[in-house]
Length: 419
Image 1 (tube, rainbow, N blue to C red):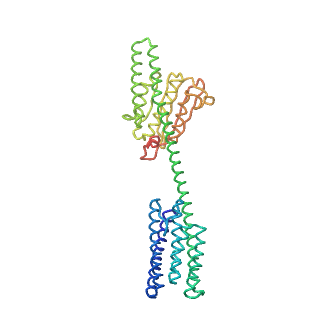
Image 2 (cartoon, rainbow, N blue to C red):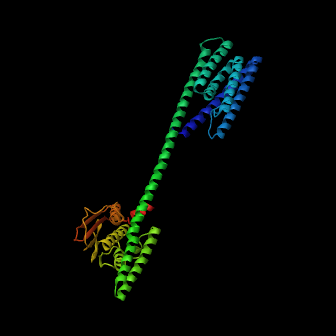
Image 3 (tube, one colour):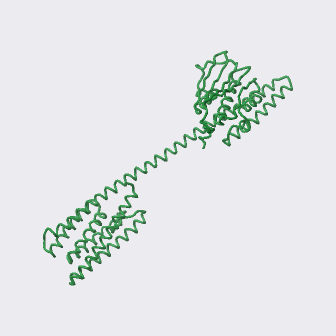
């Protein structure tokens, strides 16, 4: 049961208590008027004074409850400070004294003790409240006995009312404790939810940083390396025409790197795939970035291939060929793509110096090996597999298999992370 439910129950109890007070005061007035005695009139006047004090306490409690942002019980507000508590206790003492005087004037006024029980329990707390209820019960029994002779009938009513009030008060306190516990639990859950959201945001930011690092390595970094190699080759070339061709390739590679950088910033598809298919994009890279080494490209029509898969294949090819151009010393590189019913295969093979994959440093052992780690992460994101076949002096082959997305789903998982 939450705090809203508790406040609703509290409001219902207060309304019932106010209705009971009104009914009992009317009963006392009717009885006093019908008796027509000075003592009865005095009792009626005291009952009206008691009702006025009760109403003033109720209004004061409601005002203080609004000031503290919470509703309060009938007759008084819950103690919120020394001055407030003293005023509340004084109000209860005044109500009790007026009631006792009225009870000794009219026996019917003694039954005003029942709503008084709840005020005492609410204001005086869990120890003094029950003590005041017991004392008021004894006063009510004596007042009724003095006016109507002592007997079981005069004691049963006040005693039964006291027992009911004590039980209701205990139940209400238990309900309030339960609501407070639930509020605390809810606050903890909200705090945990906020912490989880913060953690997820941090994880998303970390994943985005990793994605950007892979994209920058596979595009801009590879292009800059290619530009350096092309310019070095142009400087060493004795043929002016060949040097101009290499310089032109370097300039085209720089323009392509600029397009890639802009595409990364805009979080769009790779620039080479914006206006052409995968095969054409790879052929363009072979003529520009990879011009330092002969690169052959064999790619079928990929028009129906999801853009996310084409993006991954392009990045993987850039990474694999870039590594081969920089590190393998190959005289030729071959890039092939094969379509299958449930996936697509990429194969990048070179005839370079090769290496032993078992002794090669891992991704955490230096910047020169980030490319392979980046490729493995990208393949894992796509749910595919990567196989590396290499040996010293025997060249290197990188084989990648990527599953095709479900029909109609051409989203890029990396772009989905950003969304």
